[in-house]
Amino acid sequence: MEHGTSSEVEKCPESMKALPEFAGLRAFLRNHRKMMCLSFLCLCSILLWWPVELNRNYHVQDRVAWLNAELQGRSPQEILQWAKRLPGGVVQFSSFGPSGMVIIDMLDKLGLLESTPVVLIDTLHLFPESYQHVNNVTKHYPKMKLSIFYPKDFLKGEGSRFDESYGKDLWKNDFEKYSYLTKVEPTARALRFLGPAVWITGRRRSQGAQREKMQMLEKDAGRLKINPLAFWDLDTVWQYIHEHQVPYNALHDRGYSSIGDVMNTRPTAPGEAERAGRFGSSQETECAMHTHLARLSAQKAMGSNGDVLSEDDVPHLPCDACLEVDAQNFDEVVLKPKQDMLLEFYSPMCGHCAHFAPSYAQIAQFLGHSGDALAARMDLYHHQVPRSAKAAGFDIQSFPTLILVRPTQSSVKLVTYPRWRRDVNTVLSWVKEELAKPV
Image (cartoon, rainbow, N blue to C red; front, side, top):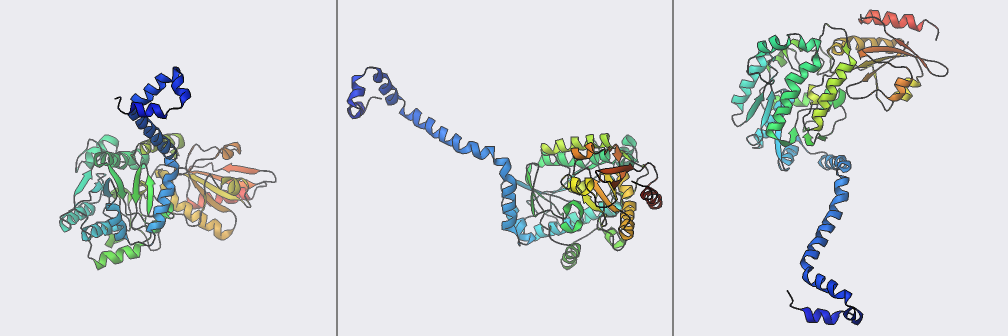
């Protein structure tokens, strides 16, 4: 421990040698050089790591945006190959719809299917044709490793027992609970079991609604969500299916463009949106807002822990003639309207809103043609009512809520639709009556 002592002492200033109080310091430096060097290196590491870690969450979206720019123009096959090189596991969640089947076929042709787990969420209420389709797919792709997850405490084919436990009309009377039991919880369980870092989906912009602006890559609850077909349209999907002889659900040949559960899926008419046939009816008239939002809060809390409600589980309620309102444009569009406005507050997760959606789309179209009023709507699943709305007198207690917003010289006059019947003619008659009254 004392080798080199004499040379080090010789290098010290004469003043230090002469002062006895420096003797202890010289001994400490001599005996703890290694420890001090290590401490210095640790301190440097902390100083370098700390600001990066503090800003990590702020820069996640920047990195995703950069990756989207880097991958722009790449083919879906190139995106899939890139995804498989990422650290952490990769999994594909699929309902075996057209887009999902294209991805499965691409993975197979790239030699990646065997190492990419495929997850199917079986709600226990799928069409018989859908179950047959799953059997056909497993035979067509023998290398596919399929994991099927069911509602908790239920097994394959126990749809009747599920209905006995929760009621066969649960999907109509309490869609949020039905969605949680049959999709959200099984999906969360699958994610916990498989622990993937990357999640492949078949979502496309052309499917509309919240998907219209999605990117190839998204950061979702700590996982990277990859949408290889984000920029494909439905025609391109089907062109691939036919060219490569990819198996598909027989229901597509009978007019079903998007297929979910037996009781809430219908064929779509020509010109309707691709997912318009999903979640098609409900006999109730409204969803209690606070109960509804409480469940959504619980679901979003799960999302913060990595258990997510996929956008594929959120119904698409099309309304081409509607002006979409959110918290950012609310003050300008609603509180400073340039004309009378019929505003709907709704949630796509509310079965009653789904039932009313086709009627409101017709109402919006009629008002747009007549010019009597502007039709708008605000999605309270994806957005929150701003404080300015509450201050202006908006009181939303249930879904759907219709409010006629009439501009005055200094503010707005609000008239809430008072009736339980919400058919097209009844609502339009009410609007006409209210517009005839002085503001």
